[in-house]
Image (cartoon, rainbow over all chains, first blue to last red):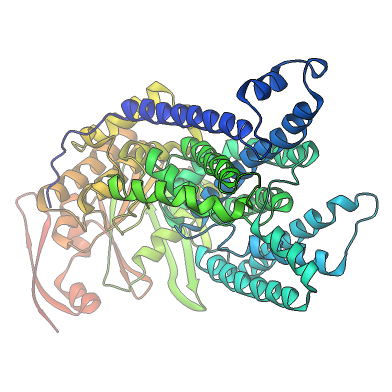
Length: 349
Length: 252
């Protein structure tokens, strides 16, 4: 064992480098967002879209205005917010459970949300006053139910990562089975609607749903700010974090609740998007490391990038149509992840 | 700022691991906790630091401390060499002052963390990730973190286990100097009895969860006690500095 120190970058150099990577990623994301607004089945020209975005409504063709403001913009904003929410939720989940395979999807939250939505569609469940929110609310309820089961198990056996992961995986299988049962019981036309929801799609995005998802994300960010260093300390293991003064169980419970909120806010309106919560944090971690002050925003930006990129691809695959985004999220994220694994010098966990 | 422990008891899964342990350490004192495997050394240290629930009384400056209060003023360094993670070495040290860290890290705090690393000749590793350093380096980094925290009491579980001879001395000398300079109380669980005796102001011998003996090294390290506690026949001689040298001869 040699204890001789060798040259390595100073910490301040690293901090600068990470900030630049985050800024560069945000710039790339902005570019993808612009492309996403420009692309669509209506084949609008660049200047048409631009003028609809910057000119008053009276000076723009009504059809163009409606397409840009009522369809494309909400979809793009929703893609950004859902990607950012799932990326952040995944990073938090991996951090509090100390496991690279943890994500809202792998712990059954998304499967339970899918079951909730499928059940609501099958039974024709309708909320009084806000019937258009029936399926999203049922999906959010399903996600919360799964989280409640995982949390209940953890309460019985201690809030350790092992108990939570095992309970989460069991919950995933249970809700996947229930989803299959609902599909089996459904008439063909209902089944089609369920499957379309499960694929995940941005087409139902409205400014109201965008506001709800965005509001939840903002609320979670505010609550996360005082916890970033405690979360960083968790990467040293429970015992070391606790000896540094981190109330590990209480922190895990708080973050777990925030993850449930983020996931429910994301999947309720767009359906099951499984890939982003798992992979965006890994991509972010390889680029900026474990410091949660940078990792969490980077995970959000990466998740938003993958989601917006997938949105662009979903509109290009079949001209004149929009393929459900849940089908294509992995297509854009996996090659990028593989590239980082192959070329990156940093361990991915 | 004397540390007083009275009748501390720790049970795990219904089994008593530490039984009515009482001890006292004066400010600046470096105490060595010795005893065979399974004697309860790690459990005692964890209970003192507040990581494990316990019965009994732990007080500092005549103030009785609960579990949470202990976690604030007592630093504990576990015996494993730490996790692999892509946190940088300086971030690990900075975490020692978790309560002072905000969204941006003050320059003075980062400088102090660098100085803590420099003390062990590791300043150049500051930007390297924890998974890219050796086990011994990790041990030193976590010790730098513990000292950077400036606790009132420092508990070290086998701090020299992964280190070569030179670095064993570097670590123990650094702890002794820190105690002398800051009045910190340090208690280290050790297996190397001769090395422990060289640095100990007080030795505490634990056997089957009970404190078998405590006091100056020469009074605790006797051939008869090593036979009884460790089941080892040993020859004890005194060094030029009057410290006991333990030469184990055979297991009985």
